[in-house]
Length: 433
Ligand SMILES: [Zn+2]
Image (cartoon, rainbow, N blue to C red; front, side, top):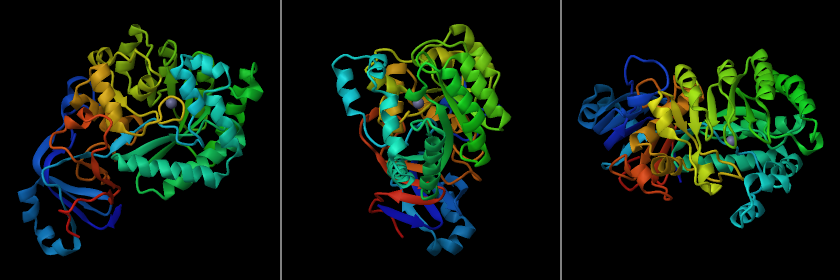
């Protein structure tokens, strides 16, 4: 791994996928605009001080007077015809855990369902003990290792949820571990408090008491310490009801925290009442009432698909992405990186699944994994496109055509990641430093 801290000039980019402004409409991409990638052939990008300062054709970039004068100070990366795109924005991950869930994995292979595993004290609850016992430093180390792995796959912005502590102390410890790891990573982390992941074992049968704890103690403590930008709730059968979710969303709003939700993974929840809380994103969306799609399309809420979970749980069924797209819903893609249902941190893998199992086009998958992920985290003013003034978040992939990104499934083609202007990755021999 090489780390470079200097002005960066990428030249000879075969396809620069900019996703720059697709029109007058402000907001996440919908419909046909999801396919407008804004590709520049034989392109160059100049980054200074962690920001993109210019993009254009390589021949024009090399004629730039500032560059001619400062060429020696600039780290030049010859991309030799490969593809550069915005660093992926992974808007749904659960990185604060201690162990893989291998017993659940084997049980599922031999036929147990998600809910049967949960009933046998597997599932989310089995990760709680490890997190409660772990030190903050140990959790931070796990998160740091995951963040490095995300970057090596081209991801530069990661949403990171707590949610395996489920007590005030353990949730605060989890969010502090995220903060510690984020400070040591060149990329950008957006933190989410997911105290309402499941009802912890000591509150079994008393879910309302646990919801009160989340609303009256956890959310105020986390808001006061500025440990999270979002509050998330797992609103589904076996987790929290729509009424409980709304109570938690209302508490979040009271403390000036934005909300997002896990909705429709196992069963249908009507979206209308939840949309009243202006969630940044509703995620999973396997079971959604068709009648709710027009309300969703009329809102700024992004529907985030996490097909890695459908794949890893061995489900035949995936969300009906075409139906969402045709209804004008803004959709994003994320990994749902977690030890139980989606142990992958590869956005290209999520994109490949979206193409093969959800019939999204490669162009739609790229927009969903970058610019719409940025909208889902409300960081689209800084992230998700390659434009002058945006953060210098880029991924160089060892492919000649953007459609190869979801095509070569299961292999990591990322050759270089630039996060806030810091480059890391197996730089190729053409690099001049
Ligand atoms: Zn999740």
